[in-house]
Image (cartoon, rainbow, N blue to C red; front, side, top):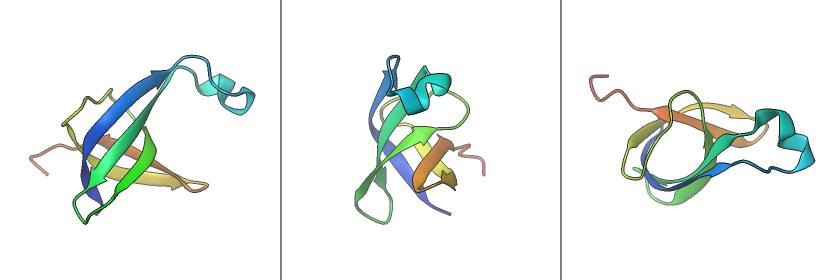
Length: 72
């Protein structure tokens, strides 16, 4: 399981044409527990800086993260 911490986040309201149907959507930079950072999107609840997240799925090379339930 890929885990990390939200380093930065923003909400996209005016996306490129390809992602118009997704707007608004949240874009993240996640500091991975294994090292390094990755840019991805959010699946489910809104996340905030310093929230713990887990990789939920990959869609065509785009990682989607969700809020980590620390009880898991």
